[in-house]
Image 1 (spheres, rainbow over the protein chains, first blue to last red):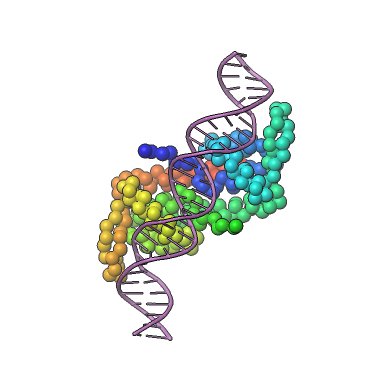
Image 2 (cartoon, chains in turn yellow, cyan, green, red):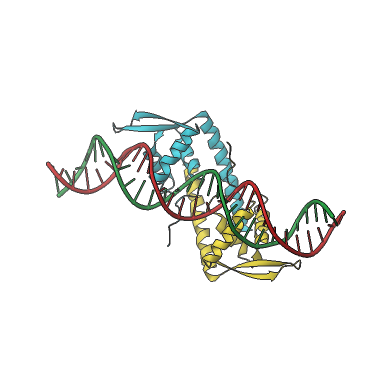
Length: 109
Length: 109
DNA sequence: CTTCATATATAGAATAACTGCATATGTAGA
DNA sequence: TCTACATATGCAGTTATTCTATATATGAAG
């Protein structure tokens, strides 16, 4: 009966991924770890959400990927922002801020 | 090709409706107007989103409805929060705040 | 030799928001 | 009068995204 609510609000995952990739290339697993870390344990991105999102972003040429050796000597697919991706990040950042502010107004309202 | 993104983040509409109903009963059309007003023109809830959401909330007994005469003498369906609805509002409020804060941490991070 | 952390990936289900349409009434203006 | 607009509710079908569950594989630790 009581189906659990999604961990993430639909539409915010791309922003989280893009922001996490901004400092430099990172593999999928690392992105999820980093989001969990920077959100102080709050946002646990599921693999079944993460990889489809990465593929989607790659298809749109917002990120690009390359197989490389990771720090522990194992192969992993490293994702990085394209130029389009940086623009997209800026746009989504602004959009989120406007949206959160609007919600805030309604909640005060 | 370029399908427009949703105006609302999935999962936030219920919160907006509940908060808007908190001061007292209001009909659907009025809810949308009030959200547009308090969000300072930012959040324009579509009818195709609003009414399904209201029916959903009524089915879950979070709101209840009654046909009444509105201020201009016409009939309209007035929705109000149930006791469950007030609890739900409090829960969703807290959830939103935690979520927005978590996103904020990632964006600073 | 078994288990755990690392690492990627897909299939199918669930949910919710959107566009577009249908319907109806009262009011204001041409 | 007729036309348009604001008020008011509602459904059908589409789209998008997240979730659960599952599959695969390797290196390190015990």
